[in-house]
Length: 401
Image (cartoon, rainbow, N blue to C red; front, side, top):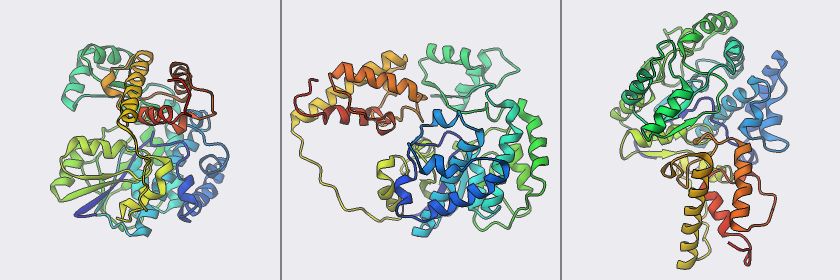
């Protein structure tokens, strides 16, 4: 890595089926971190989070969200803290830590403001404070800048709402804007949740902050935290205030940050960075669960031994391109999405909001479309159209396509 490095901590939704399982075999930080999380979570009557994340059949996010709300949130929080611990043990020295929304808790723990145990308590308190808002409202990603999004909301004539999801979806479609609902339990950053701020502060009054060991920048407050800040209150305010992540990225880039590392699953934040500032290096080490160990090494410049792919003929390459084109048409029709958003790297669940049940149904259509045989492949092994195309192309010789 060259230049200054920003460690990014994603928010709710940063979950990938099977995350950390490969890393656990090589890095003791995985078991250590989740062991401590389990110990504190037990104080709240929460079953071991490690059993869900690291053991048994890998569970997709949609299934975890059916469990107690703390399970998914502690899994995401624990993943971010764990990845940061692994990367710093490997030699990463970040210039600044940045948490996005819920990710601020992991950033503050990693930056030294709270112990891991108190971080778990903060996550549980946050979940309890927001219990009345769980399942009420929704969030969506719209392919537009802030100004366009605000005009879209204003055009709905719903002054008591931040976003009216159903009507916004129709308006976005009319404007040919990408729109995807997010798998989140709350309509986060909504002013209506203001009573949750007081509840959170009451529940966490015994949590003591520590002196910061690293710089931590808040996209909610638009500045670095200092040891003079009442950080608990700042976190509480983040429940209702917007997250100005793009502004944060521009400011840090102006300070000389040229490498952005996603300390968590998937690549939601590094993808935003790529779209915000030019000519920067972004690394999302846990984007592909099958590539975790190599991904973590890449952050600190350790290159895994090269894998020499089997040579493909021009006919093979044309075959994959044709397969991908057919997949895009199939998925665009079934999901009613514009084909241009269905890129081969776009993650169906995390980025496009396609839950595991829909993915399973669509995989059945793929099997029918290409004349494949059932082989037990799970949807979490095929998280994008590119992966599905590779699976189709690699089907046994003689399988009709």
